[in-house]
Amino acid sequence: MLFLAFSLLSAYVSPERIWWLALFGLGFGPLFLINLLFLLFWILRKRRRVYNVLILILLCIPRISGILQFNFDDEFDESGKVSYFKLMSFNVRLFDLYNWFNSHDTKARLFSYLKKEAPDVICFQEYYTSTREDGSFRNTDSISKHIARYSHIEFTTVLKKTDYFGIATFSRFPIINRKKIPFPNSGGNFFIYTDIVKGKDTVRVFNTHLESVRLKWEDYRFIENLGNDEVNQDELDGGMKILKRLRTAYQKRVMQVSQLRDTIRNSPYPVILCGDFNDTPSSYSYRILSDKLLDAFRESGSGLGNTYAGPLPSFRIDFIFHSQQLKSHRFKTYRDEKLSDHYPITCLIELPGSAD
Image 1 (cartoon, rainbow, N blue to C red):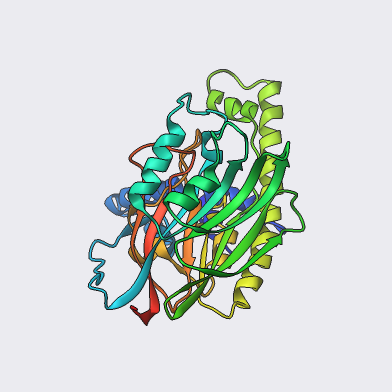
Image 2 (image 1 turned 30 degrees about the vertical axis):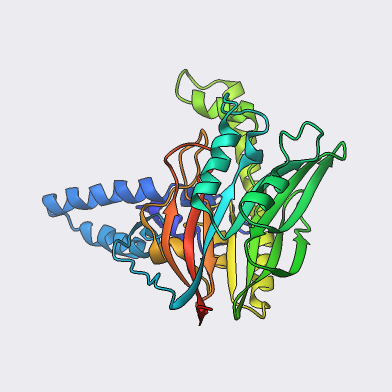
């Protein structure tokens, strides 16, 4: 019970004050299931403490909707009477530049998926493009030619004047304004916003990649080997390093989401927020950013919402939010194949104005 209560509190207590509460937020799903089993057990045993657990379980119900949804009756009018576009958010992990999947066709499969889905607006995180003469990773040229012609691309790193790393927003519709805003507490994280016009409507699309834990390969190996042998000093040292990285990331995200929220509030247009938050629906970051915005997964998703496809347990850390003037339909997480260490998410965004 206590750990589940900590998990609920993690969304309301800033990691700058008590950072370790955020760790319990990561475990919200398993903790909820464990307490649900205890509730059933105590109901059968007719124990008095059943009321305490029942109250806690009821308090968790709204949080469950952030990881599991049953929107099977999402009806949408495609007759042309409403104005809408298809939106995608996708952390592409550099289009598998370093061949993490040990498969040289990952990039080709990824582009095949993009062409098949044909989104009107795409927000990429961990974007990469190149101007090398061999033309192997001229991703900006390929996307602009085959998927969406307008773009807003900002880079964190440029190597050898040919290799560019950052985030990017592409659109089939005209872009009238672009801006990049760096996070002051991070050398490599920032957000961009892009004003896109479709018919009579203008929307401001935010695209961000919040602070990651920055785990190294030895950290992943340490996690995978936990429990194999008796705990030794190296394992203790490895665990402490991971906890320090988690603390740093949680505390940096507090400042980042505050800056992002304040910028969103000053938008003159309806807002769409996409990105890799590196945090879950049980987190402080999620609660701050979801203030006065709607979560597209909650509005029109179904099933489990997990988006992380890496070596750690899967979490929902990629999101699409939007202003209340907008509506979202047919939210989907594509898990048919692994194209990155994140699954792409898509939805239809209904605009306030009528169709052209």
